[in-house]
Length: 187
Image (cartoon, rainbow, N blue to C red; front, side, top):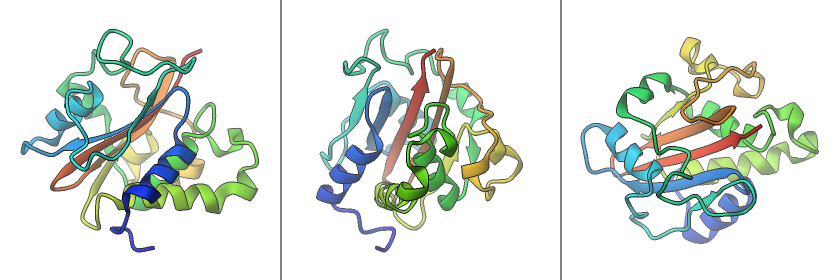
């Protein structure tokens, strides 16, 4: 599947396969030159998906992350994006897969060897929405040194965005949209 041909039905399936409890996946319009401000709007749920495609923002325990103090991104500021690093599309896809593991490592994903191709296909589909010219950012520290590093073996160091023990994710930026795909380890 070409990277820029996601449709709503495949998006919904892939989002459902990749994002569950304790995870956040939402997209908003790109309205400003500084994408970080649009990313904050998405994180704080101040904008709707421009295509009206579904989002996932399920807190641990199954509740919905809201716009109040239970939102993990409530204290994020534009300066916090200095802790995000450019990452290749392939690296972003790999990070999306690692979010399945409790500590964001493939070793913590049950049945990873059997599921790697399936999970990667879902990540390709989700990020394909942003088109061929999209930029990707992450808080995985390995990307600071090498945006083309193998993110399946990234070593497990992160620059946290939230008050959770560990959080990890991908920010997708196109000329028209910003997506936030994040997971949290709470204890």
